[in-house]
Length: 116
Image: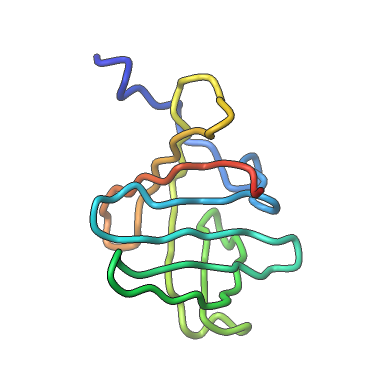
């Protein structure tokens, strides 16, 4: 096993404690930065290097799944993320790597850090 790829067993969103945290998608083409607030809002930056938007979303954890939605009643879901796993490396100032499973089963990686 390559220790650079080692992740801890699944954790849960409550243990990660999202308020005050920032998730930045690790992807060469797509940009997705989510900043979680205690009041249920997510300020986001999404798009590509050519075109970006900065929508305000809403978030909640339901049945162990992080839901990020375009509306307060969660009828327009932007993202459903489950099975969060934090990398096994110690935290640094630049954050940790968080692996999650999207609704379509795709594995996605984010950089997890405190908001600045």
